[in-house]
Length: 199
Image 1: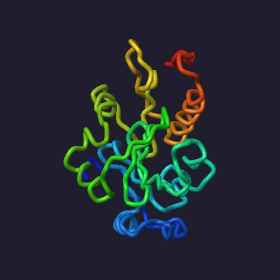
Image 2: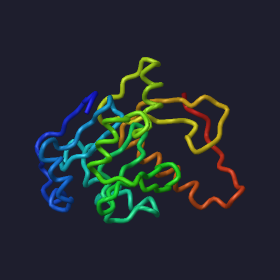
Image 3: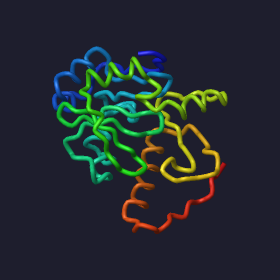
């Protein structure tokens, strides 16, 4: 993988590790998670610290994705995320994509091995790197443990140019979860009133 910014230290969360499929265990034994493509991909590790890197926190913890998103099952393994906080889940052998604004899930029709192969061959398309590339062109650098906040949200049509801002990953995921809760039960035709950007 290119643009590696962070590699997880040795495995300290054996409870979570034992629950993982063998192919993901093998990957994590070689490197206990990684932030690669200059922040475009974060594969989580089996660790307690740092909290932003912990797989258990978003799989089994208080901020578990399945507690927020209706389409996510408790057995889905949220092993990775992209630069804006969309999630990649393992459901059995299949890799799924979770849009964390809308809560919609898409089956990528690949297993973990071919997911990784596709990323290496076509990182921009596979990881949706356009926001990160734009942020970099503006002179930005995405630190490990941070994600890009996008405003207005991508799922909302807007003539306003979207602002990109690095925020701590846990803060970004909490903000996305809050946004999803606001829109998931909106009747068709009803509008969500957005607060003005703080920038």
